Amino acid sequence: MTTILIATLLYLVATGLLVRTLARETPSKRAAWAVPAVPGVALHGVAHLLAWRGLGGADLHFFSALSLAGLGMAMVTLLFGLRGRMAALGVVVFPLAAISLVAYAVTGRHSAEGLDWRLQLHAGLALLAYATLAIAALLALMLRAQERALRRREFHRWLRALPPLTELETLLFRTITVGFALLTATLLTGVLFVHDFFAQHLIHKSVLSVLSWLVFGALLFGRWRYGWRGPPAVRWTLTAMVLLVLAFFGSKFVLELVLQRTG
Image (cartoon, rainbow, N blue to C red; front, side, top):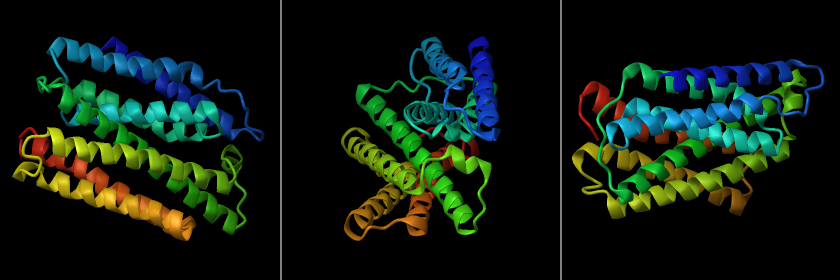
């Protein structure tokens, strides 16, 4: 529990440093926010490892999966933030990671699911795909806000914390490409390794995941073939992400919290 409290505190400190940086007239290029963020992310991962050791296996129930997705998003944010001007993502991602970790701690631990390496690979790919594409959805929202502000000639201070419009758009599609590859691998390993992949209790998750994959794939094809960009790209990204949220967390919520079943 101490590990979780410290990780949560570090996430909040990193968020506060980011907010203070973005509030300045000339945002600092120094990544002071990373000093608490790096150990915060590390302790977030340690908290799960310690819990799994106590359970004797991986816990991938709803709140645990939610926390792991938050961890993945925080890791991607660290990577983006340290390598470019996308640290602003942390203002949203770090509090979400903290909330998901606290929710996991408050709801208690479930029993280990006893997954073999193949199912662990499938679950790990699914969480990485979700985290990466969730970051893409946030980038899409930032792109939409930036375009709207520039179109209205509203030069807000937070705009200076973002890269140019074209650079942000390029980053969006690179992130979608990586997430799409991970989602493809997730679906392939699901077909190969998950017993009764299209069983009744998994059919909604499977169908929605495939629909999300098709939308992301169509968007990438449209970008390559027709040069899609701007508002249409944002709409397609958000639509695909909504389908993915419903596929993964929507189905887990209904199965585990409403119907009291595992799946």
